[in-house]
Length: 270
Length: 223
Ligand SMILES: Nc1ncnc2c1ncn2[C@@H]1O[C@H](COP(=O)(O)OP(=O)(O)OP(=O)(O)O)[C@@H](O)[C@H]1O
Ligand SMILES: [Mg+2]
Image (cartoon, rainbow over all chains, first blue to last red):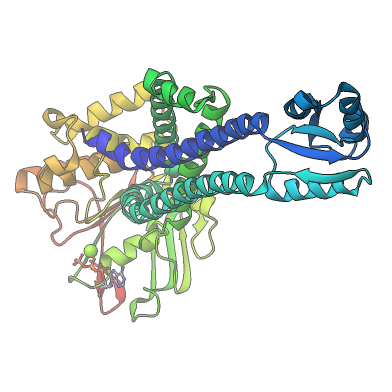
């Protein structure tokens, strides 16, 4: 019972840090996946006096992934009921060319305006419609969401670290006595701090594996998966290899850092 | 005869406060039994602290077990301490450890094999009549029982020097007798040098001993 209490405070603190990190990962991935979704639905329309080859347009900016010439037929169809086909052919020739340009990724507002400028630099392109106001609202909303989550995660981490440092004073006192006594019987520093580092490493392992279990559970929960498919994205919520390695690394880093602080702060009483 | 301790013009004080031991000269022969007496606050515990290197000499020189304590490296001090057994006035037991593990501490530090160490602990628990309390933690024991655990720990690794600060301070006559017998045994059989701070020197001791008295910062031998 007492030994569980010994571990509990650090394990819970570490868990909350690991949780914040993982939540941030998931949000980051969701936004990336969502952007990809948006990129597929977003396009820029360019109007040109002359016919341009696909290659001409693709070379204008690297962000362009595909170009599609829009057929003027639909426009003309509305007119041609009372027009002679000869005139229609003439009209077709004089009409400008419309191109639907799709992009490799969802652009930032800067990328949109750069692309627009690049397109307009081509002498035959006379007009570009980039739907910038809708685009930038969506983009800003995504960015805001990501930043809010990042700040939130950061606040949780900072507050937890502050709590840990407060707790550190108690641990320091608790471990100081044992370490002093061991020192009085000639124990070398590594032996005096061995218990502490073992405790730190065990706590980091407990926290990491608890986090592992929790995230595996969450990432396989049908409800959670349903939420993501509702938005139309598929996201890796928890990668049992890479994410776990990061979480374990962070937990070990924090706990051994704490142990080192206690060892450095250790004062032998006279 | 070999000297375990040589003090020359030894002065001791805590950081910047008044001098507690002033220019003391004394030496302790290897294998001897020494009593130190003095009024409360005269500096007996302070002197012991200097002998295991917890308090550096302010002035003069102090050599214990061939180690010059004025300017000793930490690793050399650790080495020296592994050959000293100390009974502290306030016991200094590790609260979160069982008394068995407390007694085992010097054995762990000296690298004893676990099974050998465990045997030694069992034997010592019997010697201090605490085998029925094995596995308990220090705070589950009475003051006198804790003191006997501290005694067992000081004897565990067969040290060459035992420093005991009022080791019978909390004990009845029967238990005190037990402690004196243990110290006497170590001194006679293992030729351990024993230095004991006490308020009353036992009358029943079978060994020759020296007696130093501390008064007004000076140490003098009593005959
Ligand atoms: N850690 C310390 N810091 C400062 N002064 C101390 C410290 N420990 C003891 N002293 C002072 O040193 C003096 C001698 O203390 P010491 O503990 O050596 O006395 P003692 O002879 O062992 O007394 P007692 O018989 O009561 O144990 C006392 O005046 C005490 O106030
Ligand atoms: Mg004292």
